[in-house]
Image 1 (cartoon, helix red, strand yellow):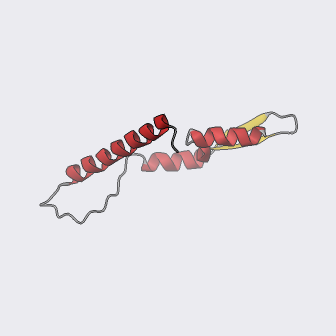
Image 2 (cartoon, rainbow, N blue to C red; image 1 turned 90 degrees about the horizontal axis):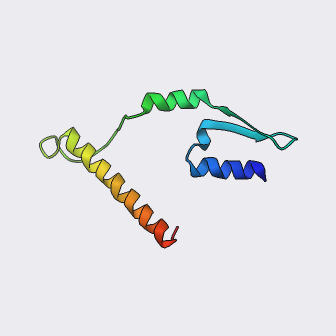
Image 3 (cartoon, rainbow, N blue to C red; image 1 turned 135 degrees about the vertical axis):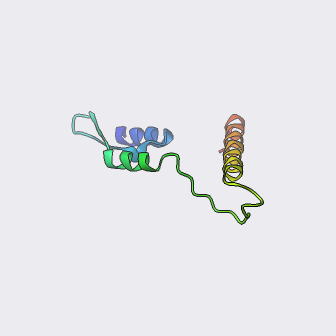
Length: 88
């Protein structure tokens, strides 16, 4: 039961992939960072690969990135609204 609760908390924080954990026979939670996964994520942090059908005369790289980040903001706002309404 404790391991399940820990797993749900880590998933809710979107950090479950960065830690190994277990509950020993005494009920104590043991955990360790997955340093290889963390380092791999650091290497890719901030890198975007975006594909578009627009030509460079229609939109430059910054325009495409700005549009993508705008979509993320819309999705975040939508999720917040759904949570406030109690819809999942």
